Length: 563
Image 1 (cartoon, rainbow, N blue to C red):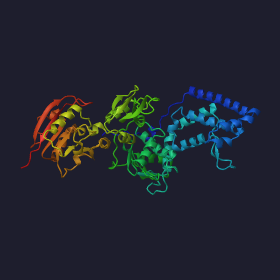
Image 2 (cartoon, rainbow, N blue to C red; image 1 turned 180 degrees about the horizontal axis):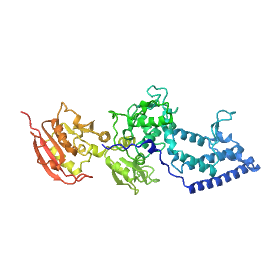
Image 3 (cartoon, rainbow, N blue to C red; image 1 turned 45 degrees about the vertical axis):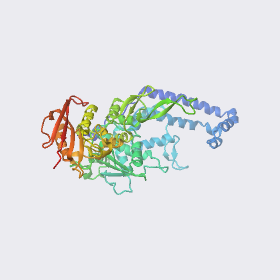
Image 4 (cartoon, one colour; image 1 turned 135 degrees about the vertical axis):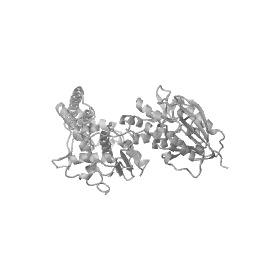
């Protein structure tokens, strides 16, 4: 299994912002000045006698029914007040200015909350009507000097953002749950109030979980998720997997969400001590030494899966939707619409051009790229891929190909193996596929009579979506069943001679008179690999596996009937 690259705190505080172009700032400021001049002209016009005399009729006559009360109660002078229009325009232009860089995505959630409050309330909000202090200060006018100074200040604060994020996450943890450590990040963390009064996600609160993912992404030398990337993950956890652990970001984080709006988070101990190291830098007298020490032992219940996919690829996968095609319309409205759109079963459409890496992921889980009737393309599966894609989006990973030795069985080799297994087979037999992958062999076996064993959780999702009976686990650690199998068909891992251990374990699960069919490296041909069993070998299949130069042979081993 590939090792995770972990970066130090000093390394992650380097430059990671896209610069703002001076020309783009000049353009924005110019547009702002021109729009503000027009606001002033409209405000001056609204003070005129003609506007005051007739504008009310325009409001009353053009108001929609659902907004009539608001418009009717708004006088012409109120509607065209200059300061209100300028405040609204300040809000729009400051939002555009923040979009010139990736600084909004990189902000800690607390800073983002402050900006959002000012954008929503550009005139500012006082603590109460007669107060002199502002709860939310007004947005400043969009003047060039102010804009440049603000953007530069945010960009130069980037080294602080990482520490602010960590501090903000810690402060956001629930004080009502004793599981949360009052001194530092513990293994289990609880964050509450993720759901609003209307049972929707509170995006500000979810943003703290996103901040945690951003910091851990920096530790792992990975790109960061966008500011709103965690919303879909939390929503899926609370709706579809309520109370179950959902693995995120290659095993660095686990999330369990509940209907009440509370989420439990567990972070890998290697990540927890780094978070605590940053907290200790900010609050040197508050964090006990034991929380700042690097873990001496590898945790048994946390498995890092390898380097996760880039968030940009995951975002592409999130954009997939049900594919459609146009067919001739024979319905009652055919006179108006000659064609209508229909869903293509088990097919996903890309909103935009999918990058090469995202396409490789889709192909890895069995998607076949096809042309649609409008000159675009979609991906067709022989199962419903929604759950599998959702699993990849959450975990951020595909199974490690080298660690799991997953090389899909080519169709011609699979068909040849199944044909050999079917010889003498009868209905009602017990079949086994011990290294099922995504079903290259199992798809050709009797589905109602076949058990699949698979080590990869993602591959298990694929197999379940296809309707197979699946056991998630390491085949070599699964004890022989009380009811042996009459047919076992397998394509075991080859590296370091692992295929030998796999076929021996499979043979121990075979019934008397049963048959084992195994796809093995060509170097095994002719060897006495299963003493006591009758063995035959097929021809050699050369260079059949994509991405490898390995040649294979099919072993047919029959177990004698005990007298």
